[in-house]
Length: 408
Ligand code: NAD
Ligand code: USQ
Image 1 (tube, protein in one colour):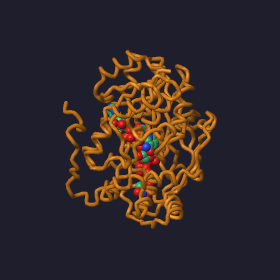
Image 2 (cartoon, helix red, strand yellow):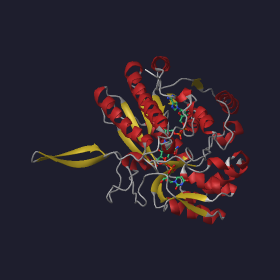
Image 3 (cartoon, protein in one colour):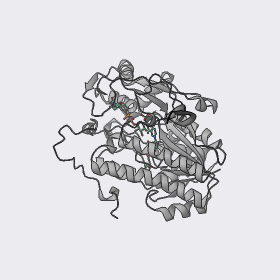
Image 4 (tube, helix red, strand yellow):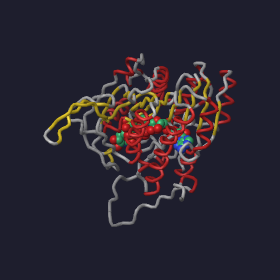
């Protein structure tokens, strides 16, 4: 298949591109490399020494004998280039990772909130719009989030895959129908993913585009069979207070002798998936597109749920790292339960990688190898969901000009 990977320089995108290429597909990465500029803005790069895109692709050619194409442009704002690129390649599948994905980054300041909405909504809309013009038969596989469902308001229900049967009451009448599960985002970032869902709904209905939305849990781990093949193919490992996600942060903190940073009671329950299963699930989903005219297919891309404090205890028991309970910088339920349907992923033949499979130690080993690159000052999560003093001026965290929402 001809596959375009939007956001293919990122943590999930790079191993996905390598996996498709290793399976013999014709892969082109599109990325503006904006994440590398955000690393510079935050002064906190990947713990692992990721190479330039040129070096990555040259290493892959050497190791695998396969060529991956690369186009550098902004999917959200360079529409003509995007449409021309899709017209020229004529992809069978487009995998869309090209969004700002950190909840704390999206809450840092008015500039970061606006940047996240502008980038994510315009990127998704530009892709859909360009598909109608250039490749209406292609299958769009989008990386969404479990966070669209929200946490703590599921009232004991198991979270279904995207849709829920509802009975609506109005004007003394009632009607049964399947609706998108009510959205309940917990950050500006998560909110953009709920808005993406409506864009998908419209384009599937109006233009009969074939769309799969993968509601993915928190990804942990860092290596895959392909990234392991050469150090120049190494994947990103975020550990800082904005982009580092909870389990990888705990494993990295344990590796460098930093206390494990539990927010609040640690009673937050979240869904998780290992990066190797992310890559496998995307491969299977790409190969099984919905038909034209079918509703958006939604898959819960997660393999298990865990409570944050249980993860901290697990990592502490494994490594001896102490646990530190910190005031929660986020506005979220202190305690929540979470049960999730993931029948489609299992039905596609993905055998879930579990925390119990011994891979936690592998992440600690990777973190220990590159511990010298860690800047401990970047570990605390300093982005606040709510201003402590509403009368104080809004935070003016500087957004680099290269990321700023363009003036009209
Ligand atoms: P990442 O930040 O590592 O990668 C995103 C990539 O997209 C970066 O290389 C960035 O440069 C690129 N990009 C962003 N905006 C762009 C634009 N306008 N034009 C071109 N390129 C652009 O993030 P990731 O962890 O790989 O996440 C990828 C996707 O998966 C995101 O959409 C995210 O919401 C979703 N997701 C990630 C996780 C996780 O735990 N990492 C969990 C659930 C869902
Ligand atoms: N947390 C801690 N300590 C930390 C970091 C986080 O206790 O050091 C807590 C947070 O307060 C939160 C939970 O851990 O309750 C998860 O935080 P996270 O940063 O690991 O995950 P989140 O912000 O939800 O975002 C990540 C990805 C995002 C993806 C989402 C999937 O960055 O792209 O969409 O996971 S999900 O959580 O299922 O919505």
